[in-house]
Every structure is written in structure tokens, then in C-alpha cells.
Image (cartoon, rainbow, N blue to C red; front, side):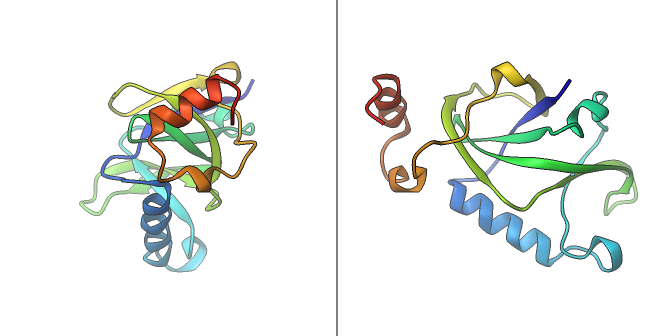
Length: 146
């Protein structure tokens, strides 16, 4: 059974900002087999790793709304932080897929999402609404106008 993660994109202002940060992170990635990989470090590895690797994605919360997702390609349980402490790396597909806006409250760490709880991929060009207030876009979607 596939599960997904939802995580707050702390300090991120927009989807474009997340893209910029991840592009920079990929450029700064290590050498060898890790060259260009997009890795997100976590203190503890996910307990449901097998379910995540069965087609799971990470859904990013930006400014109180889930806005995009990325496929999880792998887990590296032998990762090491810059300070030498052990960690787990989530290896992500660099492609960001816009989703329908879904409101989310603040939380720490990550949360698991079942397939039924995930927002659908956007069926329209979401970039054209980047300047429209999120609450207005969500309301227009609920009314069936978008």
C-alpha cells in the first residue's frame, strides 16, 4: 500500500522559491554517485519506508497550503550530517508537480498521508494564479469556477 509524506517548506515563499532552493542544493550536491541528486536530510528514517518507495511522494506545504509534490525515489539510511551525526536522506525526483491547493495547519517534522488524503494533481495551469490570494483560489475551486 502506497503512503505519502507531507512536510512544511519552512522559509519558502512560493513554488518558484522552492524550485530555486532545490536547484541550488542539487548544484552543491556531492561528487560521485550523489552528483546532482536532490536529497532531503532527516534525523530519523521513515518507519514506513517500503510503502513510501511503492510510488510515494512528498507533498510540500508552502504558506499554509499543499501546493506541489515530488516523487520519492529512494532512502539512504546511512547518510551523515555535516556535523557527523547519523541521518536518513530522502532522495527526491527534481520534478515538482503542482497539486490542487489543500489547506494545512502548521506542524513539525512530517506526516504520513494515505492515498485517499492526498490532493489531486492540478488540472489547470496553476502558475497563472501565483499572484491571486490562496484563499480566493481555493474558494473558486470549491465553487467549480477553476
